[in-house]
Image 1 (cartoon, rainbow, N blue to C red):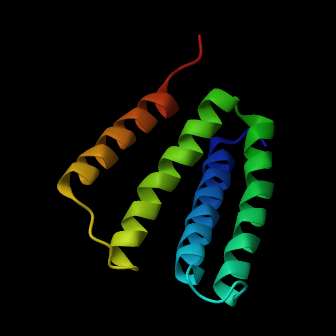
Image 2: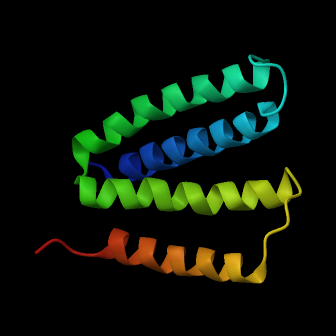
Image 3: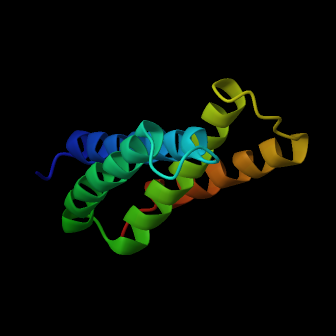
Length: 112
């Protein structure tokens, strides 16, 4: 599993499951204590953890963690704006841009 394409796919699956989990938890918040949204969100977090462990098995923590968490923040913000119709301020979009530049620097850095 040393193929960069597989690493990228594992990271994207982890980020997607994290984003779906966040969205489902948001939809389930404020309803009865245990509902399908909350259960779905918890299940998605569990699955994302499995994929994240696969990522950690092959990448340095100093690369894997910022990539997964940073991309999750970016994608979750976009999903919140589009799916949940949340208002995202210009300063938040600037922050997303800065996050993307930081993620790019981490992902593209060559080990010495």
